[in-house]
Image 1 (cartoon, rainbow, N blue to C red):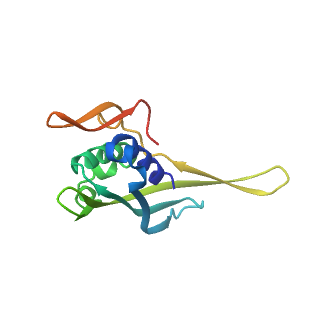
Image 2 (cartoon, one colour; image 1 turned 135 degrees about the vertical axis):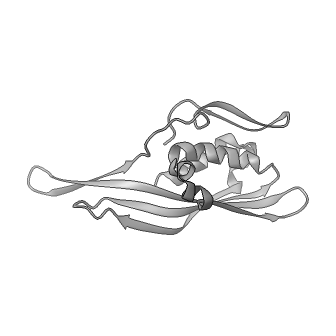
Image 3 (cartoon, rainbow, N blue to C red; image 1 turned 180 degrees about the horizontal axis):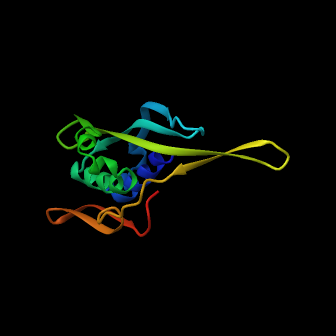
Length: 166
């Protein structure tokens, strides 16, 4: 699976709290399943819930939410484009630790398509090639570029992405 590491890198670069404290971001997968394509090949899709936990977070939740949504626009665009997914694919809860900090958990339903192509090598041995199929790339105005997220007059998060996120 490629998306968990991609999202982790993206958030660590965009959110100041995570730039300074990357160890306060945990990423794990729960409720995963493999869905066979059902065709003549062994192609399949991973479907899983990615859980991001930011420990001792003292920032505004917007500084996590906006970069996350920007990443999703490129790497899982169906969440933004499909009304039924929009309503349920992102969830969060927070444990308030004191007046200034909280542990924030965000759950994101993700999927990844894996194409498996069969061929025959010289000599007759059967070969299976695996390729992760990228999402159809629809550059959204917020997914790539040079952005600063302002909360009032202060910068809450920044990202500088010059090329496609994968």
